Length: 102
Image (cartoon, rainbow, N blue to C red; front, side, top):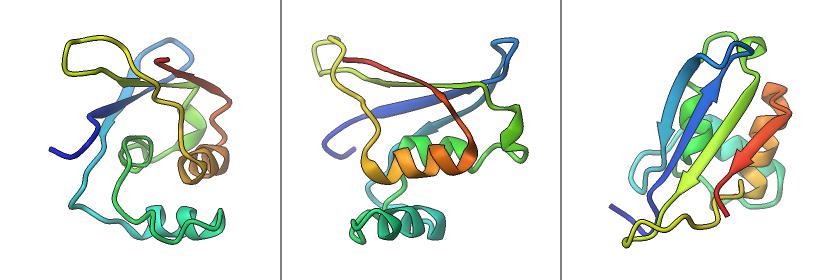
């Protein structure tokens, strides 16, 4: 595991779980690279939790919200605000309700 263990959960309007994604420090994806390049961060190629979850949902219009979590080794919540690349991906997907641990 890398520096941070981040999990992203996508829900529909009825609060049903659509997909779960976790960050990776070894897996890359063209969509992640495209989003990174679009915001001036071409080094963002490894799959982030938010994008991993988005890639599991075929119809993005079903997504109502995303919840992004990160916890320290001792179990305390830590800041999991989406990076610029992930914020761009979420905007492309039309996700407006974004919640994250702080």
